[in-house]
Length: 254
Image (cartoon, rainbow, N blue to C red; front, side, top):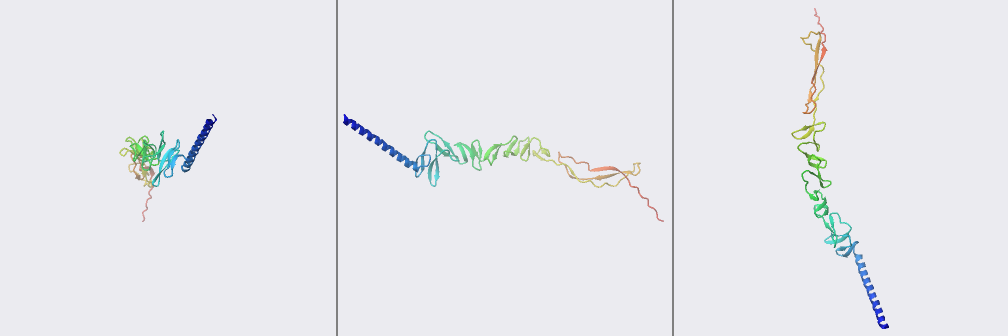
């Protein structure tokens, strides 16, 4: 009975030793792989970088000269969108006109020269929207704007509104008047007149009985005619009463 028991003990010791050797080989292999791989890689190669990633990381391929190298990232770089699946999480490049995107069909920012509208990058904005070059997106025009160059500057107004300095008005502001043909607010022009002349000679009417009483006149000219809604010109002449000077009688010389 002692011999079978001894054989069983030796067999158990050899089995335990074999398992330990297997663990050592696995540890050496994993240590050699982790030493070659970048952080986050589950498997890798010296030629192509990461081949697979650790859980929750995204697999990203990028060009390294003429070769593609893989890397494992916590989030996808700009110009790529992330997709998750039970097998692998990947980073995929956005469409050519998208600077950044949420998915293959939804852009979040466009390259210069394109404008974001409903998740797509367009060459121009539809009617009623303005192309905002700074934000690279189509923004709504304010109320009354039919066409605008910026979010706060109009290029054309509705048919019932007047245009002035990039804005649309129901009525023209003070200092301006409506031009119903052009549908614009134009500057209001008031009449402008010159200085008064000196008073003219005092003239007595022959029909009057008042002795030495007459009238004298002064005038002025208008320099600029008023517009339709401008202030009209004031009177251009004034008359006031005066007293004629007494004539000195000439003495005859003998």
